[in-house]
Length: 256
Image 1: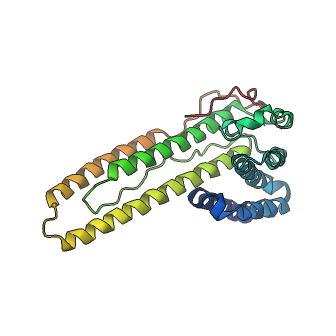
Image 2: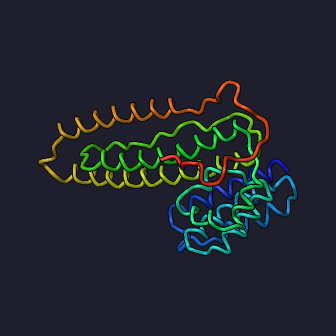
Image 3: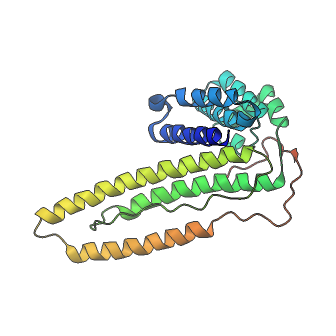
């Protein structure tokens, strides 16, 4: 069973990466429906993975303005253990807050303070990674060296969560990290290979500038690596692990 769950979690990660890189219009949602069906067939052990697929389908439905479908997906997700109340405060989902059916399903969600702390960290890290990727694109623009800069990522929390819903958002973060890293690496290899070709055919190639760019890039990479390591999640001493209702709907500010 463990191997099956791990395999299905890996499949979910792949589907989310595809959606993030290609978009639902290209990638479609067939993969998410497949994960939901396979996870549901596993019974209670696979419920959290079914919830993960349902929650992603709910978010996509919100983005596409499909209110009825979104509420149905979120209702099913909550029934299967989804409890990321932070994710339910993103801009795309906020229009549902006025719907009594969404308000009712939100009131069913239970969480611990320790898990809520991690949810905030996970979503904050998604935002930081996105900004880092954008800044890396700016920093690497016009570099003449042939080196390749990667996008460092903070280590994933290893604490034992109090509720399985935390595992869902960890997969979401891992997918976002992978998609952003792939985008950065693709752009970097294109730049590097282009510079390599030019250096071979151009007699006026600026080698001193290339060496300077390589040195500067190494310095920035070192800083990003240190910053990512410093962002590692640290559980607050004494954080409450009692199962309680989520903070009131609308009271959470999504990490910016």
